[in-house]
Amino acid sequence: MRLLKYGSKICGETRKADFLRAFGRKVETTRIVSFGTCNFHCAYCKRDGQFTDGDGNIIRSVPVSMDELKEVLRPALERGERIRLSGGDPVMFPKESLEIAKWAYGEYGVKISIAHNGSSLRFVKSLVDYLEYAAIDLKGYNPKELAYRAGISESAGEYMLRSTLEVQDFLSESGVLVDIRTPVFGDTPLDGLLKMAEMITADGDNSKEFWTLRAYKRVRGCDWLEPNQNTLYEWAKIVSSEFMELPVGLRLKWSGQKEFAILKGGVKNGF
Ligand code: SF4
Image 1: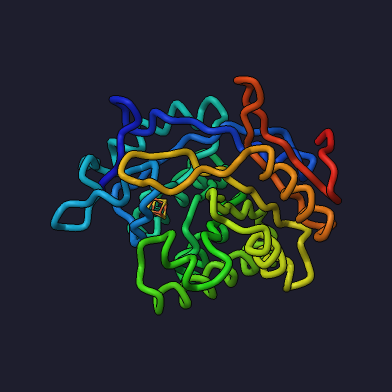
Image 2: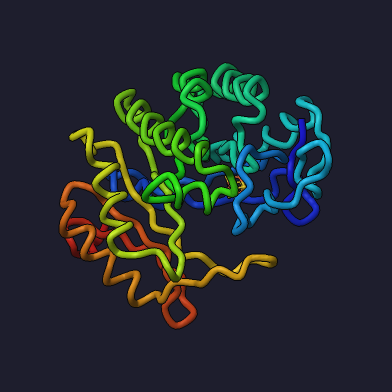
């Protein structure tokens, strides 16, 4: 399989699963397994998914054996960190993803987490018994917008929009907590956010769903506009007040301080 290094290390990156606060759970540290291939080509990808070689691999990805990966993950599991299979996208390595999930469950009795672009219900179904929670992308408020952000054709955008909503519903109906993630750009309209909130909540039961709005930060080779943080915060309040049951998360930087704000019913609360 191919993985991306973080700095000089395989799986050197950790991230906090802040959204768990909204479900009354302690924030966990996740250990990121970053796969080196993706079926999307988002121009804003922070993992260089838009820069691939002739075989479709992200240029800076490296070959790693399963044994090597397990050795790197053992100490993380022993420290109580949760494995998170992430982008590129784990969908490109379904057998390896399942093997890691079964191994972590079999040897350590713990379930894993995934970050997935929502392109394959089949992939998610294969892993569901081993998932504690999942981050699933919703990259656009209609097929055209999703296709534009993901660097795929418009016809694929239509399929992918349907797919990611099905994946989200399937996971939440299966009892897996879902952190739905949407990148927000300088030209993302408020109407687009409201439309996405409508799509997320259309199935009626949002007790396992959380929506994270991720402000785009400029990456090399992509000249898309960054959103205004104050505007985004105000819009998150509007969306949250119209969709009372859906907790909304927002990662912000105020005066140099990072904050993960969670809003529910239009107000920031103390989860
Ligand atoms: S889906 Fe994720 S990993 Fe793949 S290109 Fe897009 S942002 Fe990068």
